[in-house]
Amino acid sequence: MQKDDTNTIKNIIISGGGIAGIAFYGALKHLATRDVWNVDNIEHIYATSIGTVIAVMIALQYDWEELDDFILIRPWHRVFKFDLTSILNAIENRGVFNNNIMKEIFKPLLLGKDMDIDITMNEFYDKTGIHCHFICMDLNSMTHLSISHETHPEWKLIDAIYCSCALPICFSPYIYQNSYLCDGGFIANYPVDICLQDNCDASKTLGIGFGQTEQKDHHDDEKNVNTDFNLFDYVLTLLMNLIRTVNVRKNNNSLCKEVLFDPTNPAFHNIYDTMNSKDTRRQLMDIGTERAIDMCLLHSSIESID
Image 1 (cartoon, rainbow, N blue to C red):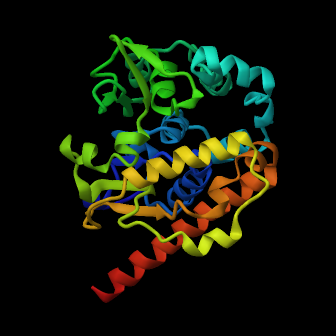
Image 2: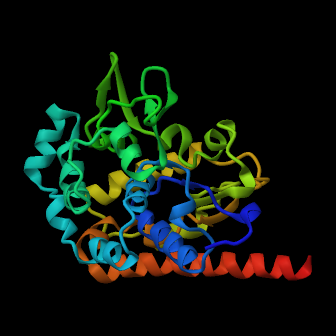
Image 3: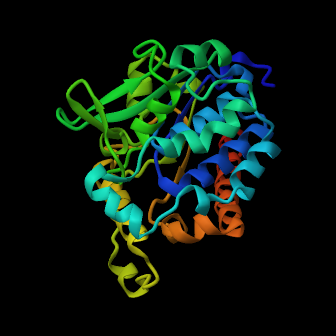
């Protein structure tokens, strides 16, 4: 528990990033165990795509060991079943997966805290005391929509998560007010600006995820093309690269504490192994831990200089 309220983290930002979300989780876990932040102090969480999944896991206040088991031990390849039938159904349904996938993911977590799978955003806030802001994109207007218990109190929590995670082709879009809602990563993958525009104190804000300030030259990577990609890997990598490209930050002057990851890391593109291998998921978690350690060492060095 932090003793000096001026340094207490009260807001968390979690970006989208697909399977890199496991690394984001690893970073958050390490920083919590180092008392950089404490869930009891958290007032707001701004999250996009996979970040919304992590946000709910945090808000439910499970022990870290229980969350580790949920991520590492659960047979995710049985949850995300990808076969010829699902591909054919995707043509008619505008996506491989629908909202039922979110219900399957969160059912054990919500029931474990005596919450209904159809809990609303307002009810979830009443239970947790945390303002969750989930970012999605309105396809018609190409603008972001922030879903919270204040803006959409009667929305089901599961629907809000799904909208923010609805990566085209992989997930069917969500129809709302004569428009399609889909993955918020296309417009605000790392919603730091949205958080600060809502008057959150930057000095009390922790950001985790992808936050590139410049494009990386990929010419050197061409000689290391992964020929083992399946169709799902290929489509997800294509879309994640697009999201990365349109979300390059104009500057690196954020006043928030941040743990940022390189989205070009090959470990963040191996979808198949991540779904099928506990060891691969553990490696992603370790990447997050190591990045968080680097952040702690950096801030310690800066403080010693000051």
